[in-house]
Image 1: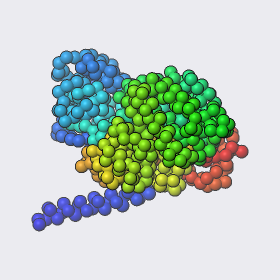
Image 2: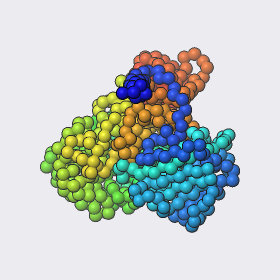
Image 3: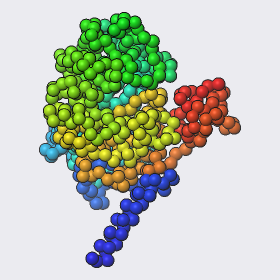
Length: 583
């Protein structure tokens, strides 16, 4: 062995040791700003740098598009105009432009399929090619990350606006890359949902699962059963006014997502998790008595009355009305934690309900328990267990049914990062960023090969998540980790490389106003501080350790700390009743 080889091996060991040490260091040293081509999340299939080449976006730059891609061009221009101050006109083309930015349908390698793209950056041009507008949109998200983070600003920033020269050829590992937002435990208005959709789009998520109903609230209007929304939607966890979406508002969400090439999957959880519906209509209960609305977080106690015909009239009406508003292929029927039904009752219920999903043009998707009741190969089981062995899911895969991977101890964004995290639950375990990243969806469950895996979804339940800042904190930085598992080939999976690329995302999140969790496992490239709410002594302050019993003032009101925690921006006492009691 030569000296250079020994040196290389020693350096490799040092790199691994440094990564392992820094992963557990509570105060990592910020890394240097990474080169954009080495900072992409999700990491592309192939990146071929062009040494010494850059492309400058200037006041004279034009965006050329194939006619079918004009909408993607408009979105790119809308992103770039506020920060650059440039006009960036968008015009259709039938050729291959020799200057500016070109978004072209066709000409990409066959390997990119219908969701991938090829991005070629030279000094003269940026050519983005794909077979579909969805592929172009994915490529635009990569181009976006190749520009300085300040491009995300909504006000004019100083240039230059340069893109490194390269050829990037990219396509997803899994066709289904999802995220779920629970709007039933705490209602989240349309603006919050749209904000989250924008965050998902940046990381190439293409399915958005809305958990619309649960014991604590019903969040969508159903014309044939109006009290579902007006009564069942009138509260939430911890009390409060709750809320619901009108049909027009739900369609607004669907359209907003579709414009970002994201498909909405509506969920109505059945036959359990139905107390809000049972409280709204007494006739849905076997005893004909409506229970009280619930604002706690208990589960497993409620069920529609399996033996009543009106139950299936109700279910059909709900599926029919919501399916008519939803152009996507799936209707999520829940099916989990139906502890108030016997196994036979559960099967009887699903035998009658699953055909109704098909009747209204949708494929049934549900939490994995339901898949034991059907041999329909179009039905998809969403695995949410915490083990790597599950007979129900294994048998489904053997029958040819697809599995959507959402193991709760890996992919649930509502789990605490560590025991001191003030938001979230911990029943499935604590999930730090490395835990969210270090699992393989294609081999995670025994007997479920990658060929049987439809994709990956990161659910965000909201028992403790009340504000947009709470959503930010629980989703970031774990959402990009899950998104990379869903998009990037397993051959690229490397924690030490990922943590550096993730660190380089921080300035972009800061520019976007995302209040992310600053995990000690990540050598963040930027640090930010938030001023206190007032200069007076004893006021609530972000980034400060509080213990149970501490009292603070905020906007002239006194609050007492309910549980020890370190405060974060967005956790102001009025918005976090789980942490602060108003005195």
